[in-house]
Length: 453
Image (cartoon, rainbow, N blue to C red; front, top):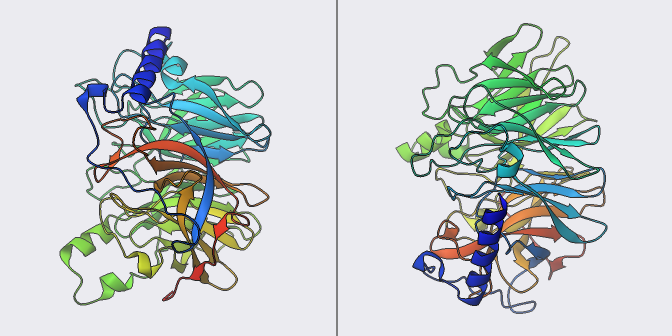
């Protein structure tokens, strides 16, 4: 964002603060009621939030958040506005404040011809030798603007400088990424073309490794997560039913694996309808976490928010996957729509934390899965300090002490937040906030165990 754009954005934010609904003569249909408070409702989780009201154009994100070794949290927040790129921030843990690092438009300005903006960092972020690595992606096309491709980016942890490492030669956005922390190599899966890329941050050399979704026949052949094993093999999920695939550096080839989990009960049932079967066929692996001690990845299958383990195999053993349990409590109901799962998996010791996908107009809960006992506990809805509710959490990480860091869509309180016609859920206005939750101290009233697991 250049200086005139920054000034315009600041004026826009001031006008919105003084006159809600002024921008574009638009007002939301309604506002979500604030939470009534402790003692008046069921169990809930209290989170401390930091607003981003100085950036009223922000309205979306997916992954793009990392608690790093310096104790800070690096994260991005996206925009669906054709005149705005995504923004990069850092939460300074020692100071308890948010620092703006860069506008992605400024980062890529020298190498980016005019066109559609870099809408978001849709990939995970990775720490390596004092740098944070990620990649950028496009959002919906705007005003007929041509998108020229995602960029590989790096953040200097010492200075906070954000650097452009190069634009992908595919001309496509990079929807997800994995990182080989042993060899310092990034892998990306592109948004619309579905190409698997290998990128060396040191040399800025990129290689197109192929098309993992050969024969799937889906319009957007895009995966939501990549996994890189210690031996350099790359894994991902593809339809139908989140089937696993592997790229091997030894052969340079991609193969589909016989490592899928059994079908969910809804699909095996004789009365399963066509929509349910179709949604399952399109399901993806939404988020993963590596367990170094166990030599496996945790993952979430999108259709039923099933927590699983994926073992990459090797040394004569084949890759395999196993189901551990659903991360959605039955009393929250199930939502089979175009988006089925959140991207918020966090693991701390023998506990897994997750925020189930809510759908339009819902309020997200924080749940905990105890791995040793196979038990899911609903800790309650996520409520911020002023009583505002959270629609969805789009990125989450955890530190060594068990504190959770989130990028959340918090419902607006009338007259107190920026208004953005893109930032609504079922007519309710929201604005992104950075949220810190300590599960050991943030629980209000006794949580209930989620039955039926």
